[in-house]
Length: 130
Image 1: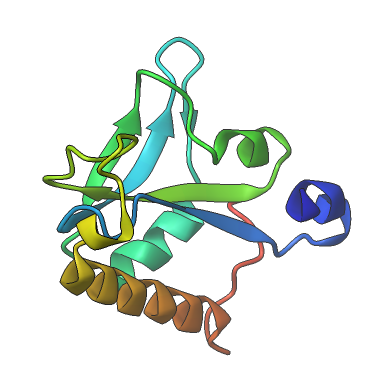
Image 2: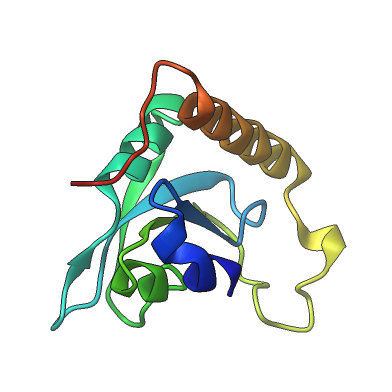
């Protein structure tokens, strides 16, 4: 809500949605959303994630829109970093803290922190995708 509310005054704002981080051993970066009304996610944010997470795959939300879509529609740079792999417990009674892959969660968190550091570095400009 803050991002959508403050967007006009925050031209450098970028949103990275973290989806199921730590529930699977692999990461993927959302590159597109939708099948009929296709929309690309932020190439600038995706390039930051690729720089620090070179092994991350790509993901295209085809069956439903992701949480990044309202931000894209509001003109805010946005993308999603999603966990992939074995995590059949998601959104079930077994979706508990104990089900988290703590090693993957640690690695994913370290990668996310590196992405934030990279985006905030003095030599990298995150003005907009355009």
